[in-house]
Image 1 (cartoon, one colour):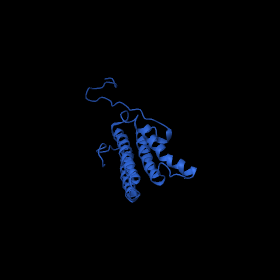
Image 2 (cartoon, one colour):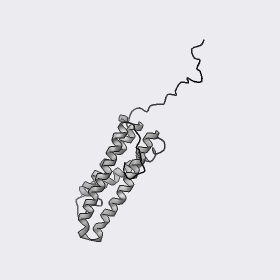
Image 3 (cartoon, helix red, strand yellow):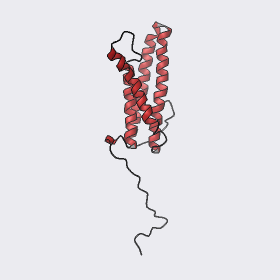
Image 4 (tube, one colour):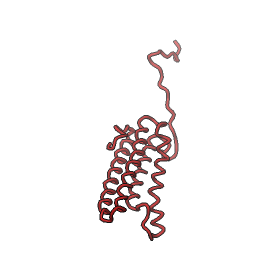
Length: 161
């Protein structure tokens, strides 16, 4: 009997090609981890260096205030093409990162708009920024841990994880 005879009940599993190089950031797990790390960096920079910078601020602060916007664009640019083309578990991570950025920055902008209504609402806007930053970083940390373990996000379209 030939050794290459394969019965219909024992078919060999196809070997999936592995991506190599790029410090692991070319793999599905690496991209999911990178998206969550960039999300954490985005909200940390947005809190430390508010955008737009206050009038009369030094040039370094003006440039630093644009870093959070650049990091947000980097997350969107990395997560959007991989949103439907990655492994099923990795697509949930890209969906979570995109939704965290969009929802977080809409709420961040609304909290910042409170300062234009009345200067007395500046305290409310500050605590709003703190709450939004904690919410976004917790979502990203939970996604980061699940991404390292190659597990899907249970509800990536929800407001919580």
